[in-house]
Length: 385
Image (cartoon, rainbow, N blue to C red):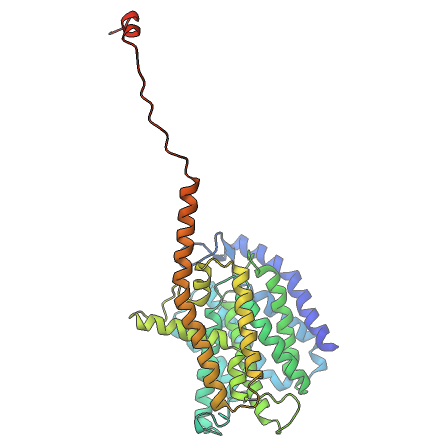
């Protein structure tokens, strides 16, 4: 009951303050201007992450006394730090190395002080429990990858929010049933805040989340996924809701951002481009070219995310050695089909548009010759002055 109230509080606060934030940002002219790789048509305020992160922390402040929040104090501190990294980058763009350094400090706080890390590969590739320093290094790499992968998908109205809602709802429910109250209340307050933001971010978006939102939300979800993998693996065999295969399930919870980042980087490197330079090669860009609207793309990709998670649920009898390659093959095949199908759809769309244009053109007018009688010219007086 308290979790529901915490989520509702976060949603209500976010719903009330987001319009105020939009007005302030418009007056200050802080936002994204159309043009370049931007696909929106008008000036749109950014930094919407301020609203849903503020609503999350207000809800935690109101209802947190019911839960052992000191258990996650380092995680909360790291999320706050990541928020200020994103805020600083939105206000005055940071250099890539400075941005990465700020992210790394937050990651170290979570891993070193909070002890939230990947400890075991659960037999994947024949690897069990990880060496301490390898565990630190691999977790740091994973958190940075998850954070920036989520940041990269924030390029379409409602997309990042939709993916976040699915992941946070599943994680919050699992933490609740396992009695991990502090992680559960954090998941649900974030969920409430993101839902309130989606009201204003759904197409046509009145506000974007910006790095203030996408970096913070991606980092928070990445940390929660790592915590899920750790606690899930520690459950005794046969425990209720022990989700197997554990490592694969953790990957599936954020499979879309991870695959999109890997796919985009691979395409850029293959074409001899810098993988860090932005372009329009993301999955949502391809689907937009196929003629899908913003909201349809968000719903389709959210549905695919749910489908892949459900698929891992269906492989509960398999080990990670079997399940993760199967998940990878399915995702790679879907990406391959997208790359093959998109040009055909674009070609059909262009041909259809061309045919409609020709059909709408008026028929060529017949040339009419004007004949003048010689007698008319003879009869009229012509002024030669």
